[in-house]
Image (tube, rainbow, N blue to C red):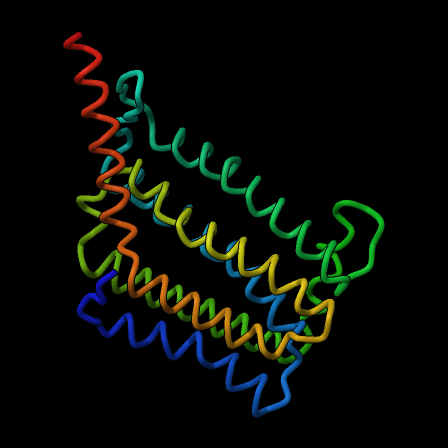
Length: 227
């Protein structure tokens, strides 16, 4: 695994993920509240991705190619958006249910009751960290997606699947972190979580993996057509 050349966005990402580590270890922030923010980060990523997909659909191309192992077809951008909301939303729902169920941060017997209590459970520190994350993803979207011109060339399929690498990592670390919280080791896992997230972002090229996966699907379809 090779470290790619770091960009200004990478350094910003490192700083943002080290903020909660410093705050928990040296400023006395509540580790449980920080973990709630990490859990909500998956939701933030999804919302920003819907915004990106909507902008591409409205301003660049109202339809795009949907490629899979059975073939390809042209579908509307709205299809990609709706599919993403339901599919990604399912992952978010499972992640949050497991997290709150194991950690015991919020006690509620109803399935959706925990979500009503999140604003209160965040506390002042949690709300501040949530704001920091929202500002970070706003700037990332502005500079890396719009000002860079990526929104003009990216395919809807690639854009739709971009967040999944992050959410798989986050599902693992957040669920594992909820166990640490249960046994009083939240401060230690905040450090581990930040390290894992930073390493994933810097060492794993998700765009390259997505391109490889899409190309592989097209190659297998071509082989099937030729046999």
